[in-house]
Amino acid sequence: LNGITNAEFYAGRAEEVLPQLIQEYTAIDAAVVDPPRKGCDPVVLEALAEADVPALVYVSCNPATLARDLSYLAGLGYEAGPIQSVDMFPWTSQLEI
Image 1 (cartoon, helix red, strand yellow):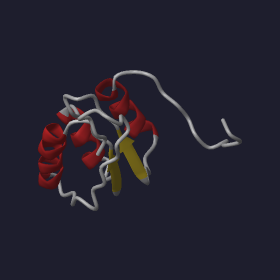
Image 2 (image 1 turned 60 degrees about the vertical axis):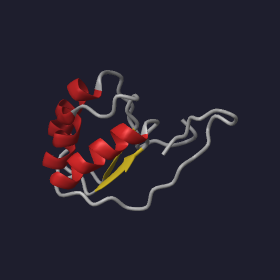
Image 3 (image 1 turned 90 degrees about the vertical axis):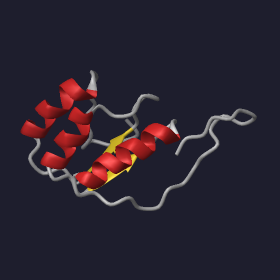
Image 4 (image 1 turned 120 degrees about the vertical axis):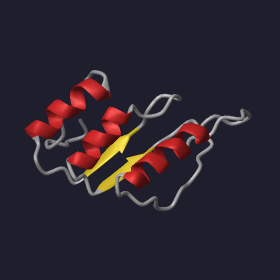
């Protein structure tokens, strides 16, 4: 894809696939999560924290579940950085954060 040779793609529910990936890849530099409106399953957040992933990028379409998950991540030792909203759907009340 676009000449990138060091990327792999997996399909499946994150809470089922992620624990297996963490066992396979022992050094993870960063992770990007883009959960549905209900937010991340705690299994996903705990697996990322247990794998000691140093940087997380969280894309959210629901400010309420983002706040909940950021609070949960803070309890796991993560600190929130800058937050930016993006108007992906003009003329609607929906934002990506």
